[in-house]
Image 1: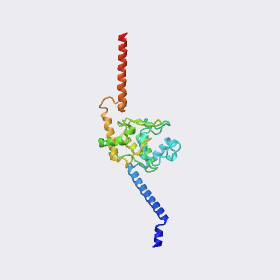
Image 2 (image 1 turned 120 degrees about the horizontal axis):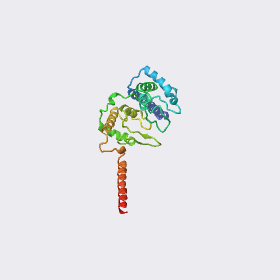
Image 3 (image 1 turned 45 degrees about the horizontal axis):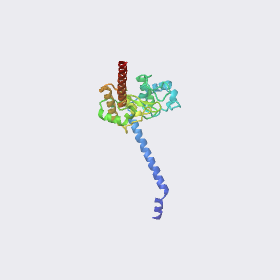
Image 4 (image 1 turned 30 degrees about the vertical axis):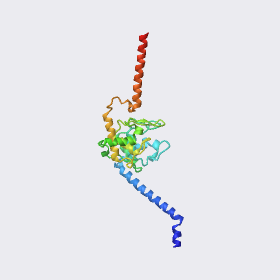
Length: 262
């Protein structure tokens, strides 16, 4: 009994148990992460697309991202970013960048849809990552009310409650979302471009992302029922406009009154 008691109190037993627990937790996390990434990559690309995409990458992207997309001082590694990141960045014209700056600016796309898919196919071979979203989540037929709640909780602090965009720090900004296609909205949520956080399926479900897209479609289509939007900045811009108009009236009345007196 004494020997058994000594073995139970051995200090290495606690260390061994802790190491075993950490290894088990890490292994389970790796498995779950891999399953989620594989599930997200729903688009199947052909080997031919990946081959053509590699040629496009070497000719247009390797200068910054390096041969094999391993990254350089001028651009990060693309291993594991997924096809969705390529579809968003290249499809919106943000990549290739026109010039270095606080963030990549949207501009006319340099590649057509087929070439963008080929680049996405190549990058998808570099590691698991978010894939092109399924069409069922892009139809804009979700619940706009739920989407509005999700948007105000997760997105409005940067993009404005009316999705009109807003300023961030160090010359960066959150863009307005009017005119952004549904697939690019979804891809931005799952890839987190620029300063945007990543909203994976654990944060916002695919159905929730569909609801957010529906909400954005709704407010874009309904326009500004209250009159001039004034940048959708709320009472600040409205108060400034009223103050400017009142001040103009006062100045005009003062000029008219002094001219009458003279």
